[in-house]
Length: 457
Ligand SMILES: *Cc1c(COP(=O)(O)O)cnc(C)c1O
Image (cartoon, rainbow, N blue to C red; front, side, top):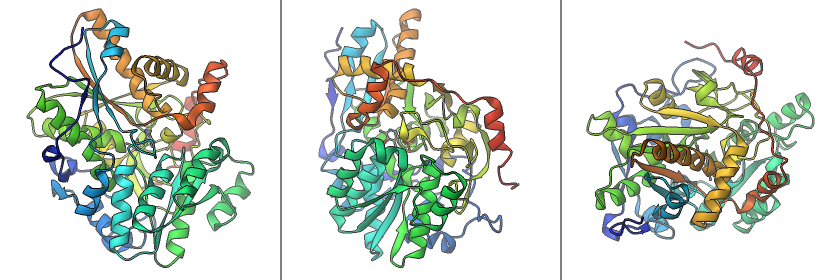
């Protein structure tokens, strides 16, 4: 069955490594809508954004026209520690499924943070250091972003304050210790250490927190402490830019063996891994040079693309952040405590939202038990214990491969395996014990939050 001309794992030579990030926005006809100042309803200026984010990152955030951004040498050096990441041909999975489909996955879990998030963490920490800042603040949901940022800050000797969604803080004490090993301070959110945290706790006593709450707290700490800026692990244009390194490596690896994918699949929380993986492929599609099916996969419990609305909304629960035009479930939406912590954000990257709105990509939502069935099959045949987030992409890759089995078509499927699941064994345990539920919000529940969307035109 194995195609002997293509190695199980494709790596790149030093000379083949990306030297620039690719800015997908440059090739978009309909640009993503600008961030708006919630007070004035006007687009956020570089100066306003500069109070929250460091200067170079603001420039990246606002630039819809430059296609390439050179990757600074210091970041290239850091990338060498764990990149290139392997593009793996899933021969064993193909055999298990008895499918004619050819399946590849880009594995981003080969670093201590266990996910792709380190690609942007090192970039954001680098620009903060370059600006002479003392430190950065951030939120983390499942803990992958906080860990990645802690690693990047330790490397560059920056202070790192992490607000961790309370449910994860309690469920994943070892994640917290990894962050502390890298020198970060970790506070469960919502907390009494910020004004917005105290307000949320007063309104929702006993809440297990959400990414939206943690973002509000981290932003408050950044803007009220001199020498600090806030950094965000997903959603923003700058994060997708940094994550393009995933797609650029993938494309070079496939081109090397003359492989053209039919479909590219990735899980979507805030949209950064998917935006990065698809970047050069979507670029070709936008320029009319090639066509691909591009599929975002989200949890049925937090279905921003498939059941959300395309509207301006707050990125955080505290409503202190700029407004972004995106597919959203409403900033007040706190999803049921499902086990894919990294996919629980209420909104979606404005870049991906625009592409989806323009019909350039598809989205599907999947229930958690089906995701864990796929995760377990993958772990047994391919050896890697996948993160629950990544397993959303595995589920749909398997489903598409099974469709190929029915039709007899040998399609080429590429999916993003964003990370490993060693800190998610409570979730795996629930699955094994038959205690995992597939809670899906009702239309009435969702409507309640749509009704509270800010009124902007
Ligand atoms: C954070 C995370 C995700 C989801 O975030 P995106 O910004 O949508 O990529 C997916 N997989 C893993 C392993 C993560 O840590």
